[in-house]
Image 1 (cartoon, rainbow over the protein chains, first blue to last red):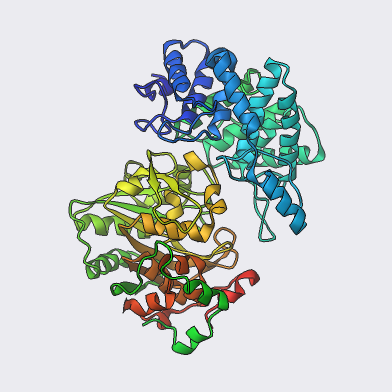
Image 2: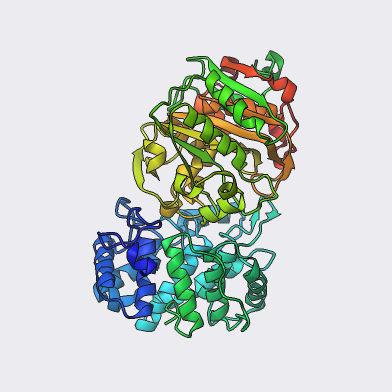
Length: 280
Length: 322
């Protein structure tokens, strides 16, 4: 039996771990993976019903229905596109994403930065409203907005994409890749992570700069040292997006330990086979 | 045995005294409402003797956990098996066995703050090898059920917070941190370890909501709202310098335990040659840290006999115990 299908909850959503409560993130990734597979209909419909029911009045999605706040997972849900989510639900989701910025770029924070002489930063996206921008939610929101910009004339989305790219490039670590988004702590260099480097590279698809080329080099060096399936998947997706995945790269060796990592591994395989749902 | 004399207290920092002066204005736990029993076990390594010695320590604390649900909460931070960054799995296994012998139903849970793949990190840290059927016993607190908890008198800006439901609903939460210095709060011990009960699945990696709401204040809040707890601090090999990730190993050869996390952390600070009065979250949590320290009834080794000078970043030189 397909491991994704057997782990679907009776409510239509997917948990992170089989038997757990349904969450938005694994549900959206499972749906993306099953839709890329193309042959599954009924579980996808049930999953989409769960997702549509979970959408909040403000257009965003909560991490799970018990949470009374839209958050970063809205970007993952929006990756499913208007055909799957429905045009209105999709439009409201994208509008919610467009409104979000890291709190450090709020008006008050800008005033504080001006007064203290701190350097300004381009607006990325936070995990949770009211917090700072970080690499992963910024990259995921950029991927969602790229899709929106392809679907319709969306000048606001394009402007945010440029700012998002600037945010990512400004937050690269000194070793070449990205970690969660703090390249330095108390003046000490912090190290990159493979999974965040992969998702950042994927979000920067279509762009080129010395910093991106350096990140690709770092990512290629990490391919054989990954300790998680998630890192393997994001690195592959990121390198494929820049045509930098070496042709003789061994198949992923790590076993996915969560539902969203199972789905990500399939999405990376689909991308390697020429169909990348993140960039279509 | 506090390890601090009257002169040391009188020469404490102005900031520390000012904060202590605010005692009583927030949701603090009265430090001297009861004697806080803290045991300091000297252990040079993670050998098999740890199992018997930890059983003895728990017996000294007279924990009544028969039939109760106990959640062991170690500290998993990074994929670096050769660095003392994570709580040693042997100590966690020893605690698991000891609580089981007391009749408890024991689970293990953690929700790391930076890296998402908790089980992979646990595997890299040796948990799968050391603890039989680890995967069945473990729950990722970042990705499990969540419950919203309201803060009646918060120290931080938070009015409510989502927490991992297993941490809220268990009968006893056992905080099992590594004894480490910390670049944002000075020292990370059993209270700071409670950050792992805040679900990354909701707030992300890192759990930045805690930074915006004030890290020391959030530590004090979590200490307040997760009251049924116990601490077992892994100080056999800790971390000094640029902790909690990039520091150096520091062998202090102790396991510090007790029911009151603040009392345990204050004792750990003294062992690390850190002045507990200058740790902001301790002051926020208990008000008068001097009173807390004087309420501690130390058993096992004396703090003085195991005191080890943990190197501090220059930015934290002001918390050094004089």
